[in-house]
Length: 378
Image (cartoon, rainbow, N blue to C red; front, side, top):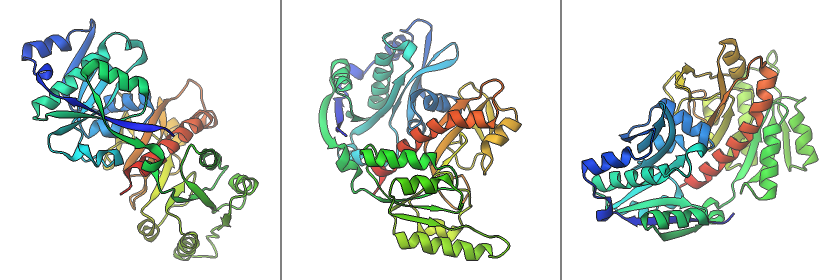
């Protein structure tokens, strides 16, 4: 999986600019307005997810940002001084009091090569120096070209080196709960067995005897398959939930993934398995208390929670759908977001067509969410 590098930059006099010089730097790219410092709003955070894969907006929300706009639309950003991040690569040098965190950082493809990236980088480092930091930590750089870029641009040097596999270790015993076709189950299983996801899939639990996920698990020789249907007229809800909890507990998972699982888990289950991750077919807000979510085009829509999110979005004539991977809590679809991405609805699309395009987005986000969970473990 390769190495990750933490780079350090001395925040010396190069980053002690006068207000006039800072203003000149902000206005140095024709047609682009750079705002710094800025607490990124929902539209910018949604744009970050849409443009850069879905795993950065929560980090940008945790910090201050330099954000570039062209014609009122975001085209680049750099986050600095993010607080309360739990990644394993931030447990060394990053904890020293004179070190401020830089990143994430991204520029839209049409703006690359314009010099905008260098402007945003410098403004973020200036912001860290103004807050009293003596050094900046550019965290988790995984590309040799980027290491050279930061070295050339701001004199960054390698301070810490991490092996990705070690950061993600130990491999968690992972149980998957699925109720339908199991395409997300198959994607996770394939990624795990190819080494792209450092997890061990130990079993499948389904509440649907006709689920295609069962055949997928059998074809892949998954060790444990439990089919636990709930016959509502014959068994109280509490009895079924206790039976489900017992079956899952017997498999002793470290991580439980809900991938198309169509049964609301009760609070004892959620309390027993705090390492519980769900993929939900809607673009959910980062604030779990909010019932609306901002989108990249500046519009807002309801946060479509519940089992029919795509259908509900289309019924409301929504222009966007999406997917979110989040930690499960007793409050339905309101757990901390690990990754999310919006998807624009095309003219004339029905639910089936939207879901066909949404599934590959889900596969990407599930993998990203699992990796984030692995990197954030205590």
